[in-house]
View 1 (cartoon, rainbow, N blue to C red):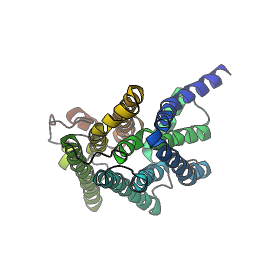
View 2 (tube, rainbow, N blue to C red; view 1 turned 120 degrees about the vertical axis):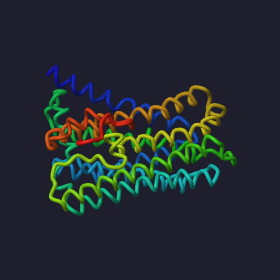
View 3 (cartoon, helix red, strand yellow; view 1 turned 135 degrees about the horizontal axis):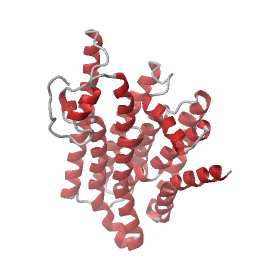
Length: 316
């Protein structure tokens, strides 16, 4: 019984940062309506597209459909609810729409081809984490993890869009231009990394070379260039949102302004932790080491996340 209550407490604490962020956004008058509408849409989307299919199939992979289409919804809300400068609104709305559609359409293609009929490896890894943490109810754990992502879409991941969408300043600052440029560079990098790996896998299948390690193009400099680029895409969104914070300090007060700044910066930590430890690099490598004989050598020569010069590029 003590273990049961301890697990309930731990999982309740897991929700706390997201709920506090929602409360902060709701407490900011100019963001209140957007927060409520976005929260309702994300909840409806996740229940319909993720929670129900996960309950029926006992698979968590449907998160890969839900969370990017949640970004699409945020982008659309920005275009319809914005009260800020139109150019800034269109830019940030387009950023969310493009990023969400790229991943969302890709996830639907995987679903159509039957790749979601079995649990994706990164979500298989989650079950090992649940067992290690003492969580025995897989159904409850599935729904808990799904709602964490739903809350993330309703709170932290929507902050860059909200801040910029309600900024009335009719001058695009140099920091915003830098952030927008950075976003384009790393969005292209992420897409290029995915294309390079896809091309590599097609070539391996054509040549009947199985269990090969991808070390071409961007994959020579980091074992996960796509995850690194995705993280940098979110950092770019943070950077171009910083100029929009000044109005919140002056209008809403220092407490609200400081809370929004802390929440904005926390987005980077959330994405890094997710992309490295939860559904990214570490889960992927757990299975890569088992499936690919040369992967341990690849780990010794190539950085896991941040790009760097490989120690040895021969015979990897």
